[in-house]
Image 1: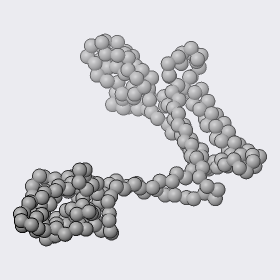
Image 2: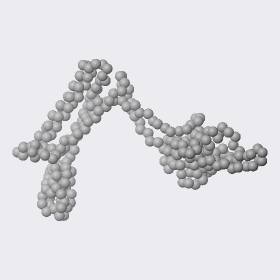
Image 3: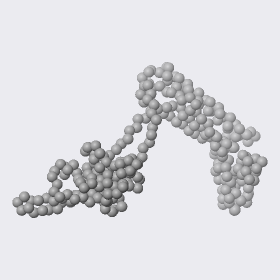
Image 4: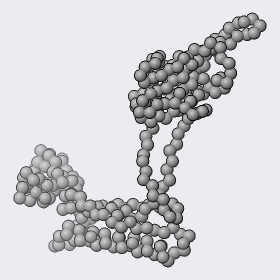
Length: 278
């Protein structure tokens, strides 16, 4: 027995999609920190990150006395320059040739001095800036712009099982229910395809032009056959090589609880056609 699945791709559309990013770029290629919360940076694989500046924009516009910078990476270890991490003398950090493993929290502590003019007393100020670096995931979309703006897309899929619950009451036991069901499915396919085609024709020619037209995509209607057996039956090419595609009643020691094609092992089953394992 085979179950039929009808897949209908009847209408087509255009959906406008735009990527969203979070950054605090003050000028191209540079990102300043923000006190109190991390700045999110999104870097594509195998690309270089922007320069991360170890101070906020307000501090950068002022004189800073004897600044020092300490960068800590996602592994909570101090960062020094290497082939993937570039740290400049002015506290700018760049991640080169970015990989997934380099994602995470990058923290910089800025230390600098303030000096009282009257007493020349020095005070050390420390500020912390956090940057979260992520690798974004992108989807490519093939977009075809319709002549009259955006329209909707409709996909329909449903499955018909000849031996669904209640099949005995709906089928005369003197006939082959499977053959009748499969014949009805083919009729249903033709009628549904004709329905969408006629609706598209009506909307295209007989409705006010202010209503978006329906466009039926030719050859988008598909019928797919899925193997299945009714509960208590299964296929076994080893035991039934002369009828490998037949759904044969499950032998003692096996059972099939659903519409799968395999009889499962259950040593407590002593009858044919078992649907459960006691």
